[in-house]
Amino acid sequence: MPGPVDVCTACDVAARDVSTIDSASDGSIDAAALDGATADADPGVEWPNAMSSAASDPWILANHDRIRVMRPRILALNFVNARTNDQMLTLMRSITAAMREGTRHHGYDTTTAPAFLEAEIAYSIDLRDAPPPAGYTLRNSTRYPRESPRQGTWGFDYGQLFTDTFAGYYGVRDPANPSRFLNLCELSERGLVHEVWIYGDADVPDVSAAEILGIMPRYDENFARIPGAPMNRCAGNGCFDADDVIPPACTRTLRIGWVNNTRGVGCYMESLSHGIEGISSQGTVPFFTEHFSNFAGFDFRLRLGTPFDSWYACTSSPCLAYPTSSSVTWNIGGRMGTIDPYVPICNNAHFPPNARQHYDIVNPLPVMSTCRGYRQGGGPGGMDIAAPVSATDWSMYRTLAPDCTGAWLVWWWQNFPGLGNRSTDSASRPMHNWWPFLYY
Image 1 (cartoon, rainbow, N blue to C red):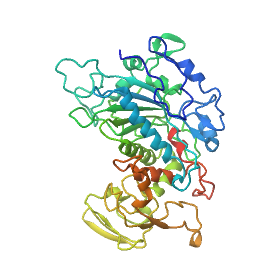
Image 2: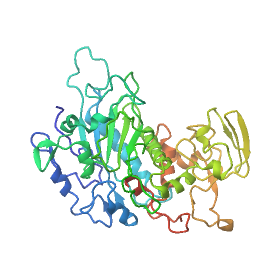
Image 3: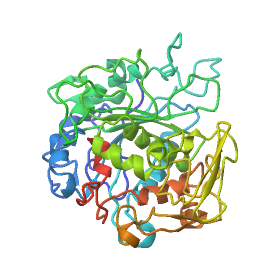
Image 4: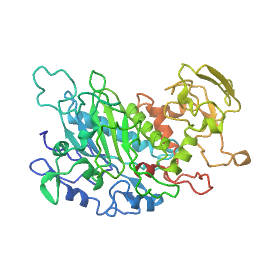
């Protein structure tokens, strides 16, 4: 068994729900105590609260536009033998800080915009070897769940995270039967865990894992959960393999992400962003898919008449150029074209509005974009107002999320219609805050 469960040793300053929960003398946690930690929460202000704590709860749907802050609970798993839990939590605290900043709607314009996602590291689980076996050369511990032989896309055996063996590692005792521990499905169903963050080493020979995967219920155009519909196993950046056994008892949204110990905040922000793109692409929540695909430039084929859906089709570097601030030429898959006028909205995780190729977040030359004023009107003929956008706009976040496309992503997230947004939807109604959709 690993050492005692570390409850909220890394909770953010704003965290309240689990910061006062103590481990039992044997290192386990009383789940009933954590359930009670939300009793004072105002259900019209934040989630989890006394009335609702689990993802996919009907309360979230019914109160979507009343929620002012969401505090998703993260189960952090440390598999890196050479990294302490404190080192893991230092990185994860920095990630949650970037998430917090990214969910301040138009936060680049004001210091008073409130953060919407206040993610909490609810459990910090030490799964390292103490010490590693003699002659052991891998950087991830012996508890790291490897498939042998490997099957499907991922060599990481996600199914093991749902087993009783891992329930013992998590160490959360069942209040109804203290002799047993709650498994991952039970932790999800009770609202004790909303996401799992795996801390591992992906830069050495070992089995592969996805950036972020998820399961999620399916909804109709009226935001109603579709009765009898199977859980969507592709609610992330890819799908769980067929051999990854996720018990039928898991009926709520649950994401499992990979935090690479050799990389930083920006790289995991990119993983999270691909997960959001994946939720949209799956059509799990039709309203979100309709609007996000437009915002993020995944509707080019329909909207601009291109032979591809988005700039993700680019395979050469560079594949884009901007003859003027409102036109673009493209060279993709052996075909070339020009779009004039071209006024992008916000585009996606790899392509800011002025990107010349994948991951180009440093282009100083501005292009016109309606990112800041998405679906707010105010321009000629009621169109959105276009304004120049360049790398200067997100340069303020290079310290907060310095690697991968992190600085761009913080600014990109801030332009999602969030809390207090002034956008309208395709039916000219006030736009819903997008962030609660992640926990539908």
